[in-house]
Amino acid sequence: MKTAIYITALLLLAGANLKAQSVGPTTLNATGGTAVIGTSEFEWSVGEMTLVNTFTGTGIVVTQGILQPILSTEGVAETRVAPKDLQVFPNPATDVVNVQYTSANSRALSCRLFDMTGKEISSKNIVSANGQAIGQVDVRSLAAGTYMLEVSILHDNAAPETVSYKIQKLK
Image 1: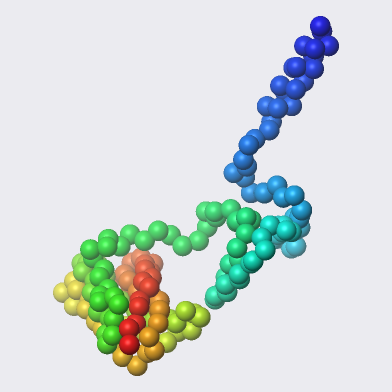
Image 2: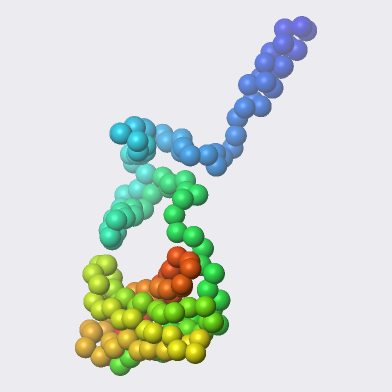
């Protein structure tokens, strides 16, 4: 009887440390592993998917699979721009994209247009007058497709705030 109690207690103590899912930085794989190269940790798995697509951009590589990075506390700060203060229209566009920002403490806007490979196509600065910055980005000469418009709001005493918009160019 004592043996049964000891075995039950041992199983309960061992099972107390088990988890159904891990929210931590590692993933338990049937096949794969982890390696540290320099200051970076790399994880890999084998046999997870039959089809894998890899997408690359400026400074980033994204692939399908179950291995996902931990959310970092470092990086880009959340924007404080209210949606009603910054307007980008029309979208989709054929000729021009209007950019309008209303704020008492901004001095200018910087607009940069990128294609989907990350290549900068055009840039434009828009100066603020009487609390409003209004300008246009010309898209007439561009081929129909998807583009990214990056709008940076430049302040006097603070770091610029950047908001990105996906722009559809028609015709």
